[in-house]
Image (cartoon, rainbow, N blue to C red; front, top):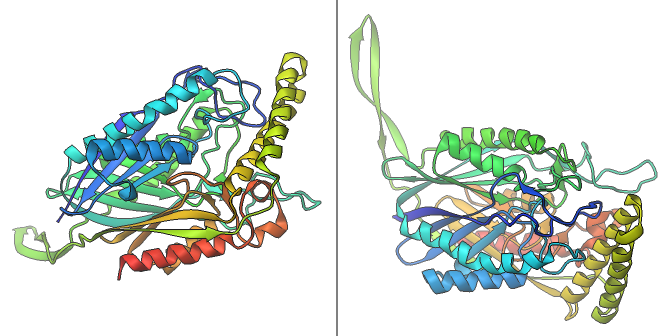
Length: 458
């Protein structure tokens, strides 16, 4: 039998920290907190293999910070690094990472990220000590708060907005964990939508809609809820890039209520109806009991493998660094005396130069090796990769999976940038111009992920 537990720690960044990093933002520091940020952990073991899954309210987790967290979790809990899954919700209203073009509030960035390993380890250890016999069930629903985010102008130029005719994944994937008495331990929720409801005008630290979604699931279904961001590379919210937290709450409520509905309909224990008696009460009343039958699926497995990805062409790290330094120097001068429009343009240029520098570093040694992690927990398969995957990737892997429910996520175990489909490279657009990858990376990833899931069932 499986045992499982859930735990949580507060990872809310400090007010005043360098914030978000939108190209069109004119502010630099966070001025307040909309909702708390959390690290929410689920621990599962079959008595031999121990795994932990952590949902983190953050934009992306760099490879360096990912490693630091793994070391802290292993040293305090004994869970092997390869059996730990770290997934970012990808909120765009959190603090920036260590390398940024911003200057104000950067003194708080390093200490904040340095504090995360111990706080994540706390959540994992809480989950581990709370573990009890558990049963796993799955379900799925649908929510329309997301839309394809790659529309085009009349001249064919792509921008980031609403493309109602584009492919989008509306599936709400749910995995439920109950104890022997049927009480909820945890819920895993998987959905593909960029948390970009709050945009450049927002000056508050916020988990965006995933924060409200988790809160709603916990309110109605009980236990703790983990939000695992899906293949959201080309999926965004129907209402985005604004400053009103009420809109993030509205969309989060809609998704959370659908997930809670699905969760409440899941009974992880296989049952069979039994008529106990018929009671005379005017009408003859049938009295039933639902008896547990058979054995629930308590298989626990982990597969870690690597996909080798083709890469694009970028300048040398030296040249990219020089260009980035020049652009940041221009930005700092513009902040002193430029207009708001000039500042926004300078910030945008700095952000794009930072993309080029990051991609030059990532591709310096040739084709990239990308970690693919697949977990089987009973009837559920969980696949995670460290990219902003287009939704077609997740949909293809789920379609070919033998699992009763497959959750596919990007933003997991580090960060390597966007992963468009091969056809998208001919179209262009933001995701294509900023990815370190070349055409064919997505298709190779689908193959490797599919093989990993199949291996979980062999």
